[in-house]
Length: 141
Image (tube, rainbow, N blue to C red; front, side):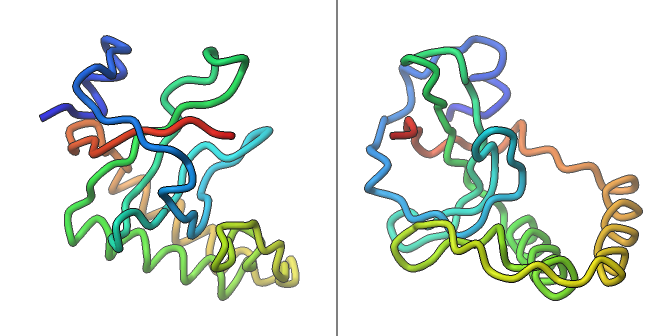
C-alpha cells in the first residue's frame, strides 16, 4: 500500500496507477491557489479526497493523489462542506460535467457561522491523510 506520506517523502509514484482526468469527476475543491489544490471527487462511483502532490513537473501542470478515506473521514468532510455551502456559498462546487459551478456566495455576515466552528474543530482535530492509501493519481489538463 502506498500512502500519501510515502509519496511526499520519496516523490515516487511508480507503485500507483496513473489515470486520466476524464476518469474522475470533481465534486468540490477545498483549497485553491492559482488552481485547485485539494477537495472531493468521484472515481469509479466512489468519493475520494484529492490532493496536489506536485506542481513542478509536466510544464507546470499539477499532479494529484486520489486518497481513500475512512467512512468517518468522509462523513467529516461532507459535514463541513455542507456547512460551508450553507453559510459561505456554493462557488467551490462542480457540476455534473466536472465544471466549476461558480454558484452563489452568501452574505459576508454569514461566513462566520462556518469559519469560527471550523477553525475550532481543526484546532482540535487537524486534517491528516498522510497514512491513507493513495488509490491512483492524475495530472491536470
